[in-house]
Length: 223
Figure 1 (cartoon, rainbow, N blue to C red):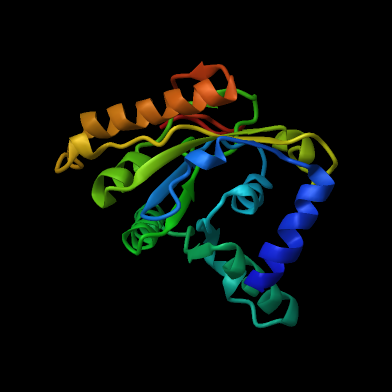
Figure 2 (figure 1 turned 120 degrees about the vertical axis):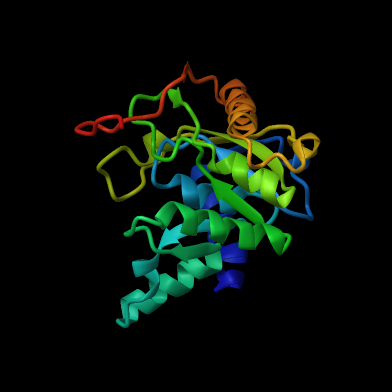
């Protein structure tokens, strides 16, 4: 399945959508790396692994991996080949489970993808980042590569299941090293400072207007 994705699916995607990729040469080819990206569409999680010069793990809902039907098993194999890591998001400890899954990938020297905003931006702006990305970087020593996705909201608009043809651009920024904060993961102020530095880098790459508050989906209220 990984052979099919790398040598058949990825080239096919490049031929059909012709994504313009900038800065891929800056991505470290070895060692733990966090890809911290803006989030515009559900298809983002497929785009990044297909254009990144190394395998990238993302979190996937655990139920995608547990179906016993033929279709379910094929979906599970496909997601596993893409690098998805199953995590149960349906309980109060889902956030901790997600961070633990990311740490396992990074401590094994892998690459892990995360959206610091926590959810897709529905208004096109870049919103305040949650500090989980900083916790991962500080606890594992991983390098953080900021990523900007442009045009994916046109490929898969909100509410649409099938992708459309639209120009896509993926921009990789200069790697960010936070080793100067070694041993300070427990400081909320340091986690916030690291997260804000990452969000500033994403904003510069994407050109989005930055909003210093967490994104709230329609019908939800801030805690």
